[in-house]
Length: 144
Image 1 (cartoon, rainbow, N blue to C red):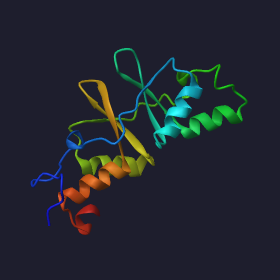
Image 2: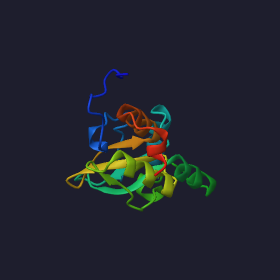
Image 3: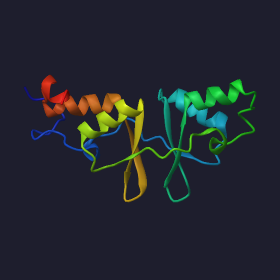
């Protein structure tokens, strides 16, 4: 059975996925503005990039909630002040299967995708599920 919008050969890498989330944050952006963007895009988080679009961290709803719990005024702190500085991302050449495994192992809801050192977009579990179904892989293939 063909799925509309999915190539007959299927998706193989995250670079082939049409992203549902191209949201990125500059490090100096006001944390309140970032929180509003997260809420309005219905996304749990997004990559933080420098002036050259290089990945420097990740801001999530949890990071914003921690800042609020610590009594920080989101109007007076930047994304860089509240973000996580871990650099977990994947290359656009990463297989969909490897991306799924990484997200599961690291308990990630979304994962920035890089090409030539620059953040292109973020894939979510939703994006990966959509792509995996497009591949037509059986359940037994997903449990290797």
